[in-house]
Image 1: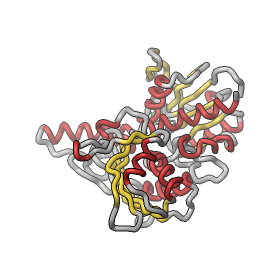
Image 2 (image 1 turned 90 degrees about the vertical axis):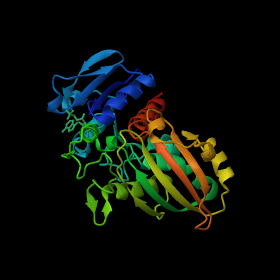
Image 3 (image 1 turned 135 degrees about the vertical axis):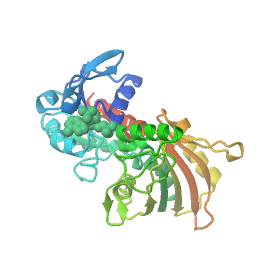
Length: 337
Ligand code: A2P
């Protein structure tokens, strides 16, 4: 990799997460010599807006990745599987949002606030964790360091955009149908999401959703707690952007809520909003568009020893995907100076 501004490609530039990568690159003034915006043949002829310009979208193919210093992948596992190794072989770095490489021991799984030093171990591919695993790790790492994490229970409230722009579009149509008194239909998701709460929609692994398996495995890997007991139910809710999670932890030592709050307030990437008496706690509507992990409702869980409960909300497209990927790329660039 050269030391001047990098040549960058974005695979999946037209998607929910990919288009957010464009916004985050703008917001963080990411240094660029060239940006190649790539997607599938369906997008040929379309453009995306970046720094006030219309950039044409080209089909991802090996020749277009050639010479890239950094390639962001936000187009699903099959595309990452095929092209990320080519980027690595060519001397570039693939920052992959898909789940394909996340549990590969040869590929670092990185959240900069939690284990940013792992970036240095890359061999051309770095995995970006799942959009629930990232905020959980950001919230739990400081508590684990201070008190020791013994057990984790999670119930999620996940936004439609986590399933991609198709579900966001389907939800919007269902909202119009309900408002007009028409019976909403669903093509993309297994149930109508509008006015609903759905504890599924992911592929199943036995009795668990793929999402439950991913979050469990990735949180264990990020916190370096391979044996951590995790109970989790993942649920889709009719929200466009920002995932929420009700979280209960059992700690090794007693953590009074005031101390836990203070620790979280000074933790990197965290914003605490916790005054329920004045209805102050994070909600997806207010958190959407921000880069921090927001935490509220920090209180004792008296049902278990050293138990603490909290409510965690993060923008799944930004910190849950794009922001984390761009932060990882910034660490890669820092490392080559
Ligand atoms: P396209 O717009 O051409 O279909 P989302 O997660 O919001 O559904 O977006 C998925 C992103 O991944 C889109 O940018 C989509 O491009 C892209 N994509 C999906 N399949 C492929 C593929 N086989 N090759 C390249 N890009 C793909």
